[in-house]
Image (cartoon, rainbow, N blue to C red; front, top):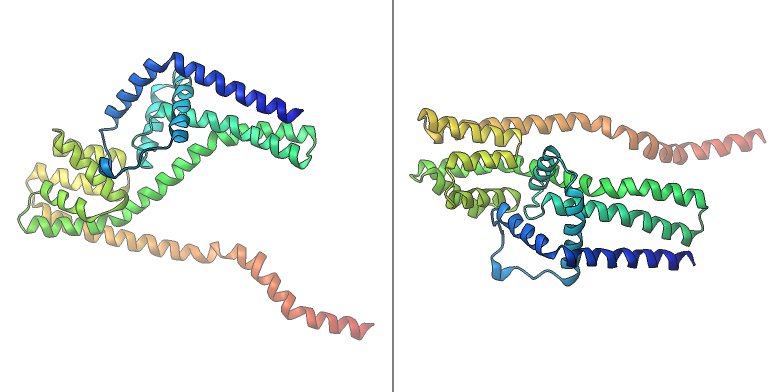
Length: 304
């Protein structure tokens, strides 16, 4: 009986959401168009190579847009800018803060429903099911944000790790006679992953008429890491002062490699402390059982 009631509530919520989407469809369509313009029209793969999204994915995105539009009215400008920055740092160029809020709300609604279903299936007590459902609301709300932050952190670390190789390519091409924009375009064809995506987006901004300095500042806004900060500031200062960019980047690459070596040494020094917990609680007990158990049994037999 309770399961039928939950299924009915879920179906009623889906019906109400679809009805609200039908009423607000023109405004949602305009918002989607403006969102595509705001995302610079960036697309990694060519249009003919991309696969069309499934009907389920489109339906979920549409529901997230409607729900996110409702929550976006209560979103401050600072919060909107923070969510947008984290999404871009994670590589989610086409997901707007409004849609992301919709995903958060749907996760906050779906997580307690899953917990209630699990609790009824297992046979948990009523208070435990209610308390767990209340806790799962917070978990469902914060889980998408935690996932985006985790991906953004891994992505920024990878970009910072690959920067010395990028600078080496730029040094070779600039000293061979290419301009900085041409060198950047050549390097974007050689690099894959997050760094290649950011370089192609920077070049696309230049193609749309943005100055090189402004495109590099936008790159720094999207990828705010110590290595990228040094790289962009060195290029801008070199152009302003008229210093050779090749020499600046050569010294910058050496400095970044020293910084990367120091970071690796720091992680190596932390390894003994991190391995202490599994060593004490996992490895030592097994060793004690293997080494001391025979002696302990022999001692008990001798006393008996």
